[in-house]
Image 1 (cartoon, rainbow, N blue to C red):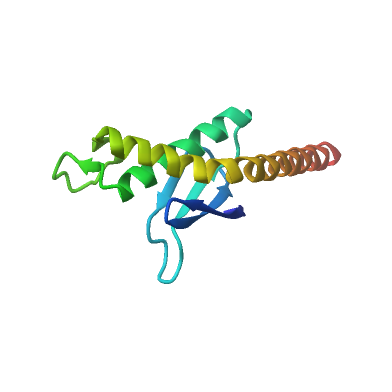
Image 2: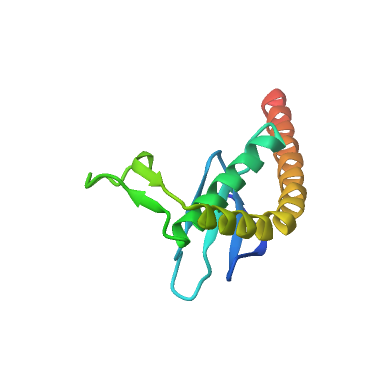
Length: 137
């Protein structure tokens, strides 16, 4: 799977690695591997930059709320479906989450936009090359 590390950005009292990957949507890993910082992966195969931003904000905020102990699993369903999470925050937790989110997105978004633009340009170029090869066969 094609991936591009965008960079490492502060999220409150820790850093988080932001990665663009093939596809859409996103996910975060609080402990990706031993010795590594948290990681957010976001699908870069989006036609609009806004869709990438939504995924980055969603995953960053979910990671933050998880760290602030505001994310709860409401069921004992063994499938661990992500749709069962419930977020509960007091106003002070919400304020803290907003500060941590800003710490992350202010430096991350410009770097992510540049990486997404390069990704999109490379994808269009690769698609054009495939189309030309098929036409020449």
